[in-house]
Amino acid sequence: MDDIISLCKRRGFIFPGSDIYGGMAGLYDFGPYGVELLNNLKKVWWRDNVQLKPDYVGLDSAMFKNPKVWEASGHVGGFSDPLAECKECNTRIRVDKELEKVGVFADEKMSEEEINELFDAHKKEIKCPTCKKTNWSRARKFNLLVKSNLGDFTEQNTEPTYLPGEACQGIYLNYKNVVDTCRVKVPFGIAQIGKAFRNEISPRNFLFRCREFEQADTQYFVKPHENKENYERIKQEQWNWLLSLGIKAENLKWHQHENLVFYAKDAWDIEYNYPGNGFDELMGIHDRSDYDLTQHMKFSGTDLNYTDPVTNEKYIPWILETSMGLGRLFLAVICDAYTVEKDDKGNDRTVLKLKPELAPVRYAVFPLLKNKPELVEKAREVFTELSKKYPCEFDDNGNIGKRYRRQDEIGTPNCVVIDFDTLEDGTLALRDRDTTEQTRVKLEDLLTN
Ligand code: ATP
Image (cartoon, rainbow, N blue to C red):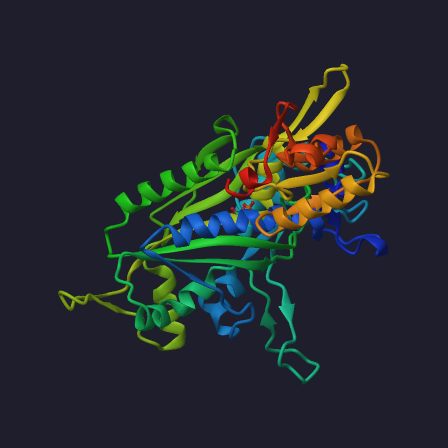
């Protein structure tokens, strides 16, 4: 993981947030190549989860919401993790995660008493990550919602607004608007990509646990009790989708929740084997019954019943949810693409073997020599044409081997070299990232690809 983090920083994928001020825990910025990869992941997700599915529509809801939303959803009352503090150096830990590390089953849904019972029995096995002592405070529940003073001019902020603790609430709030305005019929889904903010107690593992992150969510509305078959189908579709990005099957695993919240019918996570961290949650797939819409109906006073257009039957649809952190996906995709191989001279060659549709740069265009104006001019022409269709990069800096090396590290599938043969017969040298072999092609071949 250290090598991947270093590549991400060195090659402009990810920078620590507020870097020049010494950073801030749990915040990261996507650099020039990072934002391209992230946008490609979003594009492919949107295409496959919205545009190619006739029973799904998309949404982009406002981040701020009426504060009652977060009461109805249970976040104000119960969105908390158990926190304990080292009495020696004040380092804070998330107790359920630390208990898991020493082989004790615990989760954030347990009451304070339940967690403390387990913590008391095992605290001597949990070393403070900073001072290595085991002198812990009692665990207490800490609410993860991030407050803001939007629209509050009293300076007391007694009724705070919240940044979204999860992105999906906007889908529930717009469910009725979508039913009333679009020609959707149950079963149907709404998909959204949105930001989430959590006061995570110990942000860690790079993009894995941040305080600001993006989620890609789908909520599928079904007739009550018609959940099971749809749930199995959705689980399988999401698993296959992850494989379609180039994530290796051996690095994915199913994990069923043992401790379900009272309204849930079933809950599974797809876990990814993060280097250095092991298998951990990449995506949650939840069978949530009618809980979300019932809660919002109760708190808002708005009737959220669905009326079947054929039978006139009225009911609150049940919801099947998929929720995935895009930062965790980004990391999984980079980890599986990251390869170090020997080149023909026996030196290490680092290559990001990203699928072409995900690569930040599709074609890198090089004049063979910088000091030959006719080559540079032709290369600029090729760059201009290719850029109309693909994300491209022009590079005439340094020797060609170094230019290839740089593109290999950012995952560019092909480099296009303009050499003296180009001036003669118009063909371009096309170098393949994975085999390093070169073939001659015409510009038209690349444009019609
Ligand atoms: P965890 O148990 O790891 O805290 P969670 O069960 O609280 O995760 P959900 O609330 O189900 O996570 O969120 C859905 C998805 O959002 C997760 O599967 C994960 O990919 C992502 N996610 C959750 N918390 C974070 C975070 N702090 N940083 C980055 N991604 C996150």
